Amino acid sequence: MKVVLVIAAFCVAVCLGQNSTDSEVRSKRQTKGRFLSFPVPQKCASRPRQFQYGGRYYFLSNARVDWLDARNLCREYCMDAVSLETEHKNNYINNLIRAYNVPYIWTSGRLCDFKGCAGRAYLEPRQYHGWFWSANQQRIAPTYRIPPGFRYNPWSQTGHKRSPQPDNAEFDINQTIESCLSILNNVYNDGINWHDVACYHKKPVICEDSPELLNYVAYTNPSLRFYL
Ligand SMILES: [Ca+2]
Image (cartoon, protein in one colour):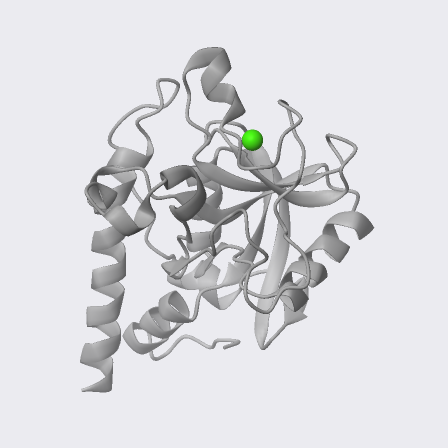
């Protein structure tokens, strides 16, 4: 029964991901028909275990890729782009960015501005209420408030337009919506903070263990030796 539940949960996640990603790549600079990658069992079993936090492994990939490719790079290892649900975890990731002198990274943060999000009044105004962590489907607090459990607002208070993030600044330049959440390292002389950024930009990513993908691959590959 447990195996069935794990597989069912995995299928739901992948199917949801596939439904959404077709719309997630609507940007004029991206091609249609891209999907979330399936995990690769051998890569999951030997995934990079560069950092450990909260019972999960993480690694920094310096390959510069767009947002969807960043998630897929991680997913092949049974990981996903990092999610920052707590202040403590956000501080931990910020310290890694500082220590490794990374100019920016992708997170799993995403604006719910694709097909499956239409008509949901509670997501409006979308720019402030429509953010979520795509790795675990958890909603992100309204962007103008300090999130519950945080002592500061992780969104930058400045950017291209010298106004608080998210500012969807690139839309004014070339009509591309800033639908993805990146952590920028002092790009606007603003410290290490969250910014909404257009998803086609190529950036490094910090990958985080995905318990859902790890459980699925472990149950379906019982002979594989894993670090869970
Ligand atoms: Ca922005």
